[in-house]
Amino acid sequence: MTIAETRDVAPDINQITAKSKARSKLMMHGFLILFGLFMLYPLVWLAVSSLKPSNTIFSDTSIIPRHFEWENYVNGWKGVAAPFNVFFTNSFVIATLAVIGNVLSCSFVAYAFARLDFSFKKPLFALMLMTIMLPVHASLIPQYILFNYFGWVNTILPIVTPKFLAVEAFFIFLMVQFIRGIPRELDEAAMIDGAGPIRIYFSIILPLLTPALVTTAVFSFLWTYEDFLTPLIYLTSIENYTVPQGLRLLQASRGASTWGAMLAMSLLSLVPMFIVFFIFQRKLIDGIATTGLKG
Amino acid sequence: MSETKNLSKKQNAVAFLFLSPWLLGFLLLTLGPLLGSMYLSFTEYDLFTPPEWAGTANYEKLLGGDPRYIQSLKVTFGYVFLSVPLKLGFALFIALILNRGLRGLGIYRSVFYLPSLLGGSVAVAIMWRQIFSYDGIINHFLWNWFGYDAPSWITNPDYALGTLVLLAAWQFGAPMVIFLAGLKQIPQDMYDAAAIDGARPVQQFFYVTIPLLTPIIFFNFVMQTIGSFQAFTPSYIISDGTGGPADSTLFYTLYLYEQAFTDFEMGYASAIAWVLVAIIGIATTISFLSAKYWVHYGDEG
Image 1 (cartoon, rainbow over the protein chains, first blue to last red):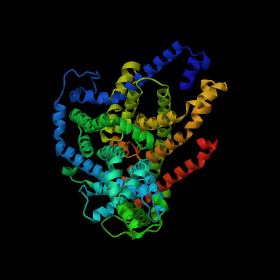
Image 2 (cartoon, chains in turn red, purple; image 1 turned 60 degrees about the horizontal axis):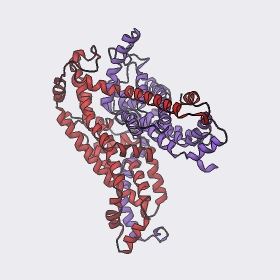
Image 3 (cartoon, rainbow over the protein chains, first blue to last red; image 1 turned 60 degrees about the vertical axis):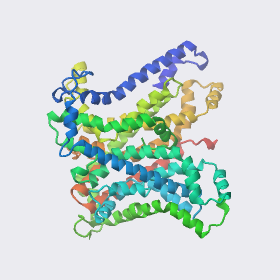
Image 4 (cartoon, helix red, strand yellow; image 1 turned 135 degrees about the vertical axis):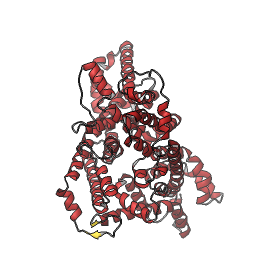
């Protein structure tokens, strides 16, 4: 379609007048705005519907609710069997620990791969890269058996421990790339001053690595927060559920009367992600653009 | 440079200290489990009694004795073949428009990227389910504007998978951002040189833009394909964890989950997991082998 547009608007590159160029830009803006609204419409629908009485969510399609049904939020927050403050607390504890784990462990490992010399460096690096492509399902079952053997099922340990063991190797790769961009002269100067690798890591690399650490922290938070499969497998009693599991519980027990509550909690569960998105959107987009991190 | 020095024991010790989290994780949580699930895939194991050697029985069952497994393969391949091209098509199309020096690029990019960030969540799957339900907003629209009494998309086996494909396409933002970054890398000189040689914009698109973008197209294609094979949450939420209606949304990973954690057929589920690894491995290998026929790298001259 771009091609067709180009052909219509610019029969020859030399004939493009300023006027037709401006017109084609206006048309593109028009198209992008319409398409953007279309893309955001489901989210707008969610926000509006969460404020409508349950019995009119489907019959009343207006964008502006006739009156604001805050009851949906009150009822939703009560949840099923446990209120949402429990689910939110669980989710935030897990996501925070995941952030700390990934930032610490991946930066340690990345420093070794980017700056230190050791035996079997190349094959180990290749192995690390291969684990990025490996589907999680390949190790899911034996991991479960292992954690079950440790007596860790129905605790957050199976979810959080892997983050402290740098299992999400994509972040290692991200940081290795970043550290390679830090001038080696800085390390060497410190080395001449008598600093060893450990001091160089803490006093030179770590502070300069901050942008990559922030990217890692943001993606770790988002992915752990929205993860459904891992909690579904490991967290079995309701008081340990995360927000996605709480939503699922609400969905499973639904009747027509709880639709409003379910949509209200769905929207609320997205709020932390919205906030992270608005604060770090540059970071997120740069992170994806430069490393191809999945969104 | 430190690389030229001989490795001392101390150097090695310090390096392995830094490496230790990953080494431990790799051995305990990746390599060990991989070998473990390889072994389990040849056994019958329900988690409570010790595994019993079953030879190749699990794999034989996969090859013919389990219609639901075959169904999950069909559903997943259908999903991958439909959603990946659709998603990448949208991503490339919008990226090309955004790359034409429009004002407000940052805002557009953020708006189109947002669904990609939220799309994997349970909340969005719940939202999608409501939108496409029988009395959802889509059907209201079809009835009010076109007088078309549309079916219930979510509970109709012919259309349920389609709603999941659309949900995937809605998340074209991440590959779009990568395409945009790639388009920015194409030097203006290339276009100028092509224009001097008399190339029209259409020709420039086909002879400059597309060839120079093929490495990015390839990267996005591989990553999205690998990711799509592993989709789980949307099918779980939209089908209430059943893969229904009539197993029409029974994703591979959902069937794996069901076998392992609802039916506790851990041996059989391990075989299913290993076949997934093989499928993804083969798909990636085919992609890489095909790359030399259509991916152009800048340094080839």
